[in-house]
Length: 90
Image (cartoon, rainbow, N blue to C red):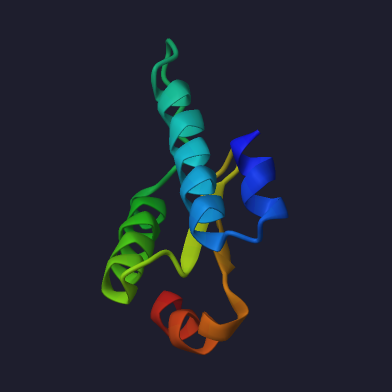
């Protein structure tokens, strides 16, 4: 419900937080299995840290990450911030 409300309200900050929390929760659950399932790599974790750093510098969420069952990030960025965020991710 919270994610749906964020999307309907076009609240990128709430969308970003829910997206990243959901992704983190999924991967934490994978690590908690026996044997643990480790999808994310050191690069995946570095991307998470960078996204949090970018958002902290901006003072609010301007980008967000999510990972499916694999190490590759999907990055969401508000249109007005693509030119500032993209070069930092490359």
